[in-house]
Length: 217
Image (tube, rainbow, N blue to C red; front, side, top):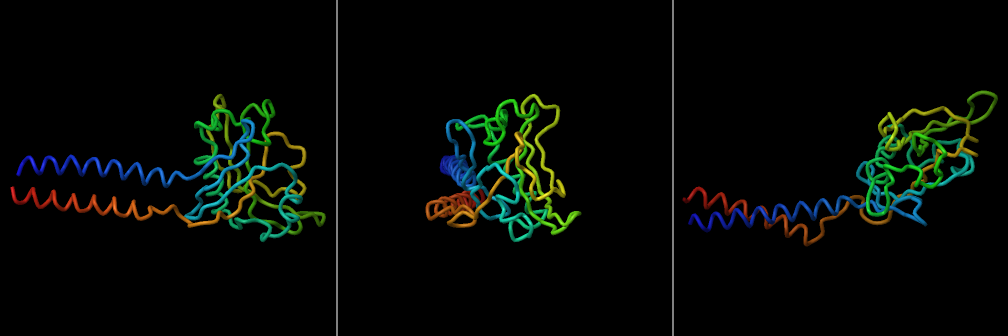
């Protein structure tokens, strides 16, 4: 009985470890889009339980977001969700990995060329617009993912209330880039699938058998 229990516990341990690796791999779904060593965006970025694709583009807010004068011009239309999207850029996209050192070297991001700013790169997530910010000109507010370089005295951070800025903002800037988001096709959250469900079921069975063995010993 003791040998059975020890074998069962070892088997359970391996199953739990393997299932953790499987689940962790499924959750870590963001895939960078890299062209000639430059980060141009990513697919499979999770924000508040939904999955998005994101592209880094240059230009003015008005030229990229249908005039930048109505909330409906933006995919995220509130400060909290835009802030989560900016945080997702820092946590899931601006990272160091096999595809590139996009956290340590923000200048590898499209729109933030080498030497453009000594402290890093800013990626904007606009979320609200105002028709008149003075003189009849529209403006907007944006969240910002501030990806700082390795030598910066300030850590990477998110700002959720940058602005208001004129709708023409963005033209000619060299260390700032827009993040343009689209809802990805497919499930909103990564699915374990039949294999994952079976694996987790086996974990529960093994734990139950271990408990029975311990009580009968």
